[in-house]
Length: 478
Image (cartoon, rainbow, N blue to C red; front, side, top):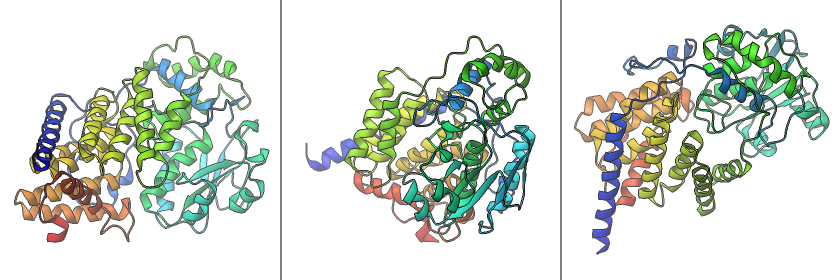
């Protein structure tokens, strides 16, 4: 077989695999996005032409037995796997101060988040300008944050107020979550030089951790307490966990057995349709081997051989454990992302495996939308604009429901490329304009005109690797 024949054979194999995946996707109903209170996200100056979310199945009910297990593992174990000896939370009204140097988008996004915490989680929390606020949110250059926590976009620490206080207390018992008997102060550090969406996402996750759970679990499908970072804002599940954390039946200082004894009554009151909790097992950390492999695969830097090997190890660990859930799906997704430049056929296979697992798991519409964006880019590179449009159309409602402007912008730019390939220049032009509107929030004002093109550029890179071309780009055409 000649090199040309091998290239054509590979392109055919990728194309067949992708079309089979699309056929399977068409037969399987997408899981609905998690339900949440109406958000002002849709009030952004976004395009009216964005397809609204289509009819969705009822939100997956929250099962109290699962909630109890999740609550215990989120509340009594740190991300490192280290156990926490007692439950801690803020007692009484909570005040939060936003630093004076906050980017302009932070204040309205914070106000919307605090309103949700009050109404959905029942937490007595309010903004203040007083320097003695319980929670301080400070903004710093990204390089300052990376100098302390290299792989974190933002982070929260207890026992200090502000960056200077943290630098003085760093490494002492004051900043050790396990040493607390209750929560009195905490500081959140967010990069000032980043996109509005990343600032908002950091506000959601770090304020939630300042208030409650300190762990992340890869097995949670509908939660920001998951290092897969698919969910951008707090979900219905997250609000239920926070509401339980601040239930009057619980208090700071309670041990895991003491909380487990009271949790069934708490959940029965908060979630009466969730059924009985049954026996509550002691909290167990997520398997460290999987977490370590994924951390190595996700570390900063180019997608080299060592990161791909770590992703393959994560796939092997999850598969050997028999997990047909979000853990295995995410491992496949990471492997697909890291394989796109060097092995597009392997990347396609990995994305199809991730898609199949996500589609079989309730409550994973947001995750599926991210996978569909990758598959859409591959379909575009293979000269399948109709498949590209189908994938992006399926993904857009979940991206909107998940309040992910960056994902919407990328999907619209890929969609523009497909429309141009089909000769629909007017629709392609509008998709480019719409993409740039969403990109200003998702990627930042300076990047808004160029970052969404990266998704389409990735499709062209894949096309070059596969020996094909998609021709003139929508971005170049307009």
